[in-house]
Length: 137
Picture 1: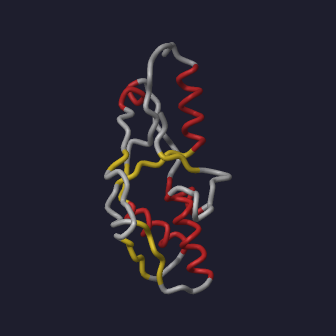
Picture 2 (picture 1 turned 60 degrees about the vertical axis):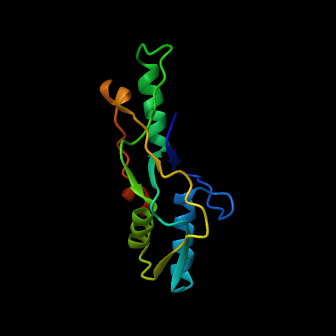
Picture 3 (picture 1 turned 45 degrees about the horizontal axis):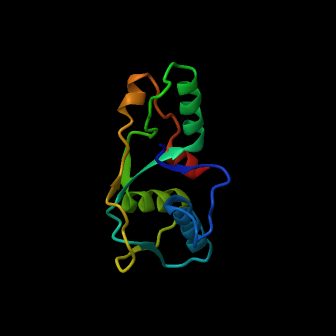
């Protein structure tokens, strides 16, 4: 079971996308239009783990090359961050200097989504893609 996936050809539609591509689009549009603010759903406190699709593919190949028949593995990066931290990261990378407004009238969702990927790490696999580097790309 993977964590929140992101990568090339992600869905950037503000109505149907997940948090990372939505933030990237909102921040980019706000900077382009010189908007003074962006609005983010919820309090900003929920924690999310993100995994690049290339890391998921790598983990799948890693597991197929080993005798793991009948086993179930969580595949994650092993770390999480708050939505507030993510929003600040995206703003910093894109260069948006406006205010982030957290709309507490909107739902937060699950308080934390961090997988226990220790079984996979014990076999020797870890994610290698940097969230910050991919956002810069």
